[in-house]
Structure formats: C-alpha cells, structure tokens
Length: 135
Image 1 (cartoon, rainbow, N blue to C red):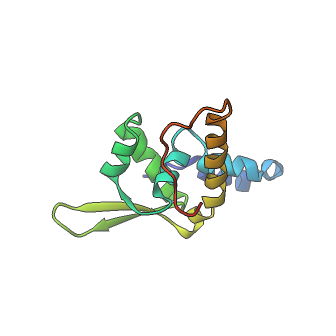
Image 2 (image 1 turned 90 degrees about the horizontal axis):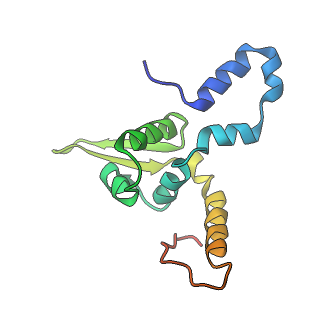
C-alpha cells in the first residue's frame, strides 16, 4: 500500500466531511503539493531538462537519499513530476516535469528573481547562481 501525499489526505478529508469543504483553499492546496523544504528546489532543477536520480542527488548534497526519494514520489503521485524507467542495463530512471508541473514555472521564475534581488540588496554581487533558461 502506498503512502498518501498531504494533498491526497486533504482531498479525502474534504470529500468525507461536508463541514470540511468550507476549508478547501487554493493556498492550502498549493502548500500541500509544493510546500516543504525541498520540492521547489527539486522542481527548479527539473524545469529545463529531465534529470536522473543521481544527478539530482549531486545537485542537492544536503538532502538525504530517503527524503529525496520521498519528495520525488510525492511529486509523482500528485502529477507534478513524471518518472521514466529506461529498459537498459543498468536500469536508468529519469525524472521530468509534467504539463501540470510546468505551470509552476512562472512562480519559480518569480522566486528566482526575488532571491537574486534579495542577495544583492546591499549592493553586493550575487554569489554564483545558475541562471535558468526562459528568463
């Protein structure tokens, strides 16, 4: 039996409790699907190209393997990320953003812009940061 994501729990609760339907909120839904420490960072690395698990792991050395696997599974279950298994030896697995996940792009671009502005708020140069295409 697979573990339910936060959003799946919320939707089950909302549909089972007529009084809970009043707390259905787009902000709550966004936080359920994209919230947490890692999901937006994972998505930022997947925006422009599919990536293998090991590549994501190297890009985020501070995340544990268990947490990366859990976050990728949650994003996949919520339809934001697609997992593709290539029938090769050794097996190769790629993660990519789905069409639904691509809708997060403008939000991520705004967050990137805000972060760059914040880092340079005192007139200092921004530390080397990757620039995503589409900017």
